[in-house]
Length: 241
Ligand SMILES: Nc1ncnc2c1ncn2[C@@H]1O[C@H](COP(=O)(O)OP(=O)(O)OP(=O)(O)O)[C@@H](O)[C@H]1O
Ligand SMILES: [Mg+2]
Image (tube, rainbow, N blue to C red; front, side):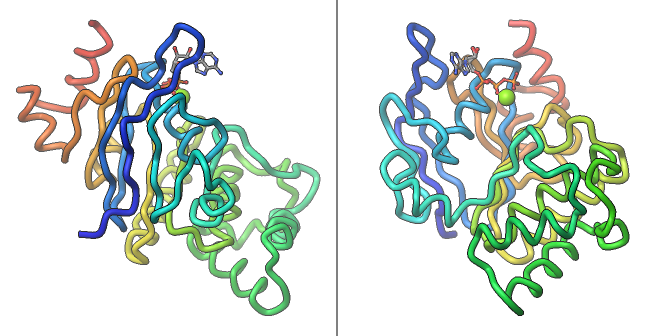
């Protein structure tokens, strides 16, 4: 299997606090990969380095041969990022938001039209796309954000807590979208506190705890290595420590 992301001895310090403590692992192309761990474990810090929002103290993340710490322009073309905070214009319709962002990505004419149609079919928002975003539910806004992040055909989709504050229907549609992306060989990396959806959706998961990579594997492998019945139990154990 081809490796698309290589995390190499990644360290992130905030003053005296070590948020990421020498983490190394790799993610395969087309993999659905979950990051889990207790609050403050370092998951969002990892994502901020991967998406080039912040720089590592040492080490690096290599995406398709490019360095996240030194080649942010290249990385931004490869990665689609769905931030936890919604990045949309509430007074505009969903369609106008998509048109705006498509323009920002330099898409024009028939390509622009086709891409918008394509990303909408992934997240399933066609019926409400002419309505203003401020009339959408939290789940619909999140799906629109995912649609925006897919406009430039990223090889890697990164989502931090994509299902927080999202209704059951939208949650299902988000994971349907993830499955569709997998079929297109897009790599998806996301964090979530909902372990059931992680286990269901992810090919492999990494458990981060106090900035360290505690374990990595399929849910079966994780249960075996911790000698636990469920991944939920593993997380509960870490939360108690
Ligand atoms: N900009 C910052 N300045 C100082 N400390 C920070 C900063 N960002 C994060 N931290 C600290 O780094 C550690 C890791 O935080 P991070 O947000 O990466 O955790 P997380 O795993 O995403 O947690 P959660 O599950 O609560 O989202 C925490 O102790 C946090 O307080
Ligand atoms: Mg976080």
